[in-house]
Length: 308
Image (spheres, rainbow, N blue to C red):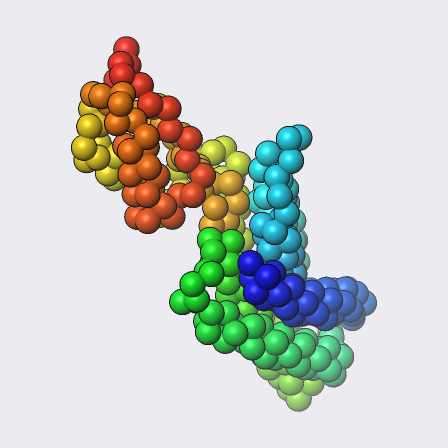
């Protein structure tokens, strides 16, 4: 347990450092973008905001997974990650709409832009992304070394997934930074100002699919939908195969936060004297086959309906 907490603290330090660098540069990039009127910089700042959100959610997930639940908040603050994801998605969609409308207007009526500030700011952004990749890749290597350790816990698995997700976010943003640098060079050398709105549209095209998926996932979790990778019928059939089980009713599966799933169900059995053995077997199946560690099973000898 001590080892897990040490690893968690190390992961948090790396994520906080990358988050500080990325957040500071996001502010600089969007301010410079509006000042010089570069849509490419503004859209890349939006792309970087995706990274900021990913890092914040990773930190929230790690921090809250280490905090015990209370009688007031029985699930702690796990849902804060999902709420942050939801709000961030809405903001990014609004920003993408603004950039798209502005880009279309500039394609019709191009405006002059100084390419040098674009190159300088985007180059700094690329450097920050590369630093972030290096820091997070070190953490990922350390995590992989301990993936098969005896003290490996579900919380540690969740933490590793969040670090990996943050790494992929920063890695993806390097593409946007490279594109903005290219746009700045073209503008500076050729005076082709149409490149700025074209690059911004390209970056929005990268942002919107990821943002839409993030928004759908957040809404699905908030309305207590069944996790997309889990099959309701498959779980029900697995429970039905347990010896002594004659029925499964009111089966519900939902997501508490990323990587943590919960289940509740009424299970009808033939012989109440075997209830504890059956309950242990069901919990074992749920954890082993479906990674469900929060299960509430009500054992019954009779159920009046066959409703799901």
